Amino acid sequence: MKGKIVLSWSQIEENIGKRLGDFLGVTDAQLPLIYIVKPAEGDVKKYQMEGDITSESILKFHEDYVAGNLKTKLKSDEIPETNDEPVKVVVGKSFNDIVMDESKDVLVEFYAPWCGHCKSLAPKYDELATKLKANPNIVIAKMDSTTNEVDGISISGFPTIKFFPSNRK
Image (cartoon, rainbow, N blue to C red):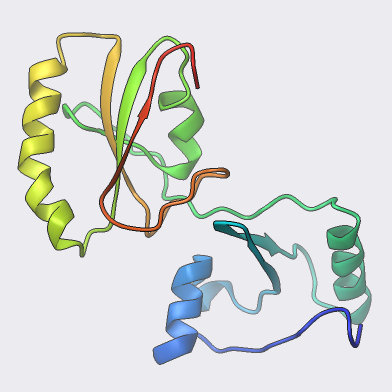
């Protein structure tokens, strides 16, 4: 594979390994794992190898990548058991069901829990959602973009607010 791919190895400890683990959505309990990380225009594509790690499986993983047979690996929290607050919680796994619902106008705040601007926006965003909750065709939602990803949605700063109009997703 020399000259075709750059290989690196990292532990998830402190500093860069911890940041890499957070970026990939990987914990110590999940290791060892193999990923292909490919920078793409305005985004980064990540592919996780499944199954046992052997020389043959790594070569097959690379072949599948080159052939375009791999599906990107996206981070997602679990879908909340209840979601009855005025501001709906969206995670990667529920994005298509909530945000891409063609019958609804959806306003989504992509935020980071540590973001000061996001924290100051929260009461105003809650107030907006409360005022509009009587209209069943409007959804005010938020997604923690540090732990959730959606293919085709690139977030470069926090908060980012995007509108997804009905019938024009």
